[in-house]
Image (cartoon, rainbow, N blue to C red; front, side, top):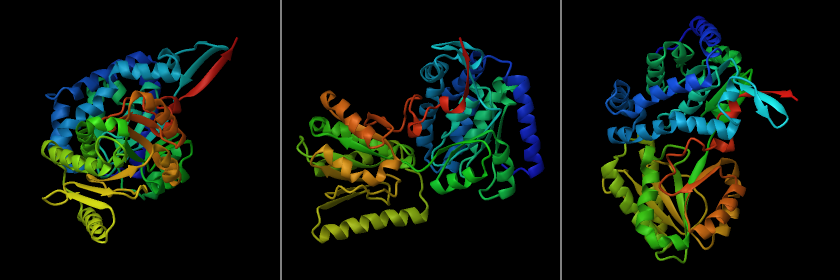
Length: 431
């Protein structure tokens, strides 16, 4: 996708705003939602042209294996069906119709509307990241300019094309562009004209975008997630390890919901060290079913460094055990008795660490509070509510069963923020 010139980009923004007035504002949200749903149905059909083209092209742009792409595309799009989006509207806005007209409220009447133009700056770490906010933009009747990551521009373009094919008028309110980061002229123009910017990326990237943003800014920066296995759940240790391995394997551990490590409480049917061995068995299985894609040379070097350090520490007498794939760096599991939270180089590299008791987490994770996103938990029902309270107090935004970390429901509040509610402005009428 060639970078637009400043003149081209300015003209594109003018067209988007004009198309919004003509094609979005007069329509009902339910009508817009129906069009989106028809496009999503195409993406859920493995024989549709959109789906087949995505499966053919995304391995090259994302670095994920073809098997992984086939596996994750339905996971991405199944959450965008009309019934799930409407349920989210009801949860956050009260009803879908509030986007069209005033509806009764506790103190009179209220309505909600999106800004004229929302710019979406997408990250490229996992395919489909940010498509939800693009869909929500159209639903709240905002024109959407999508700036793709240079690493993965394909899926946003194909999705926009499917919207256009279903409904050309709706598609005319959505435009996808790309340019290398650091183009000050284009960034000042785009971020300066947008009424709202929704951006994902590194903290440094978000800080740079925020400086150029004229309107409201919604940013999703660096986040980390982990797994937590309680002692009573270890009666099913083999199954849990298999599920935890799936969480680490999906998207090759590239998402903010990917577990960086797994904490295992001591005193269960198997030890944390034994759980690490079971996790290695699970990753062996998923390497066959969903092979890891290629990794950059510098990442491979980092993973080998992690392995070398684990071996040297074990030789020095530390309580560390390394489990490594026999062929290359396909997967790595390190059992480490030190419970300190350590980031992973990703690409299916995961540590298992023991806990004497869950109460240790408060001190271990103190410095990580701003970055915590999700925890995949295996716990008995009698402890789950207490655990969720504890994790929420630590700053975690999502608690879910192990094995489901990488396919959250649409209602997941990324960073603890509303999904649709962040995009609208409310007007109240008293009486």
